[in-house]
Image 1 (cartoon, one colour):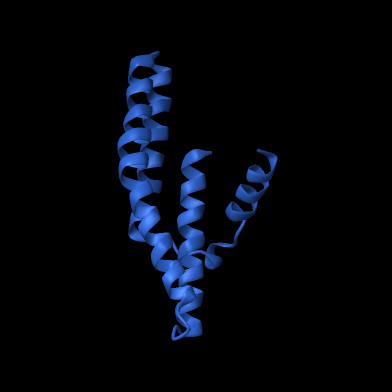
Image 2: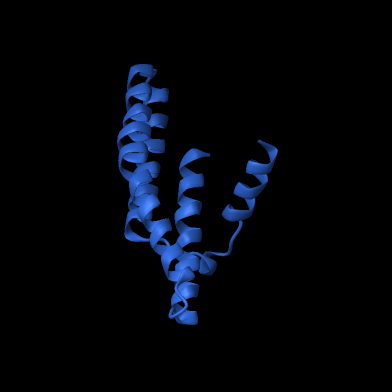
Length: 111
């Protein structure tokens, strides 16, 4: 567990220009920020049922059903680019930055 935390900290510590966030990454981050606001509002109103419903909706519908499927495809596509000997250095750099962005978003949503 400590090793996973260390790897997560390193991924989250990349400079902004070292990662590329896709439209889907940005959408999930936006939904995460919306969730944080909704949960904070529900806590101030003592609406624990709303807190539970909002977290459930985000975790199961947006993260597990939707984003994880995108992330698998995104990471597989990046691996294909990196393993292709015909890929240019610019394509490899973009694939690396995109993979970092996807991994960073995966970890940010779990933190």
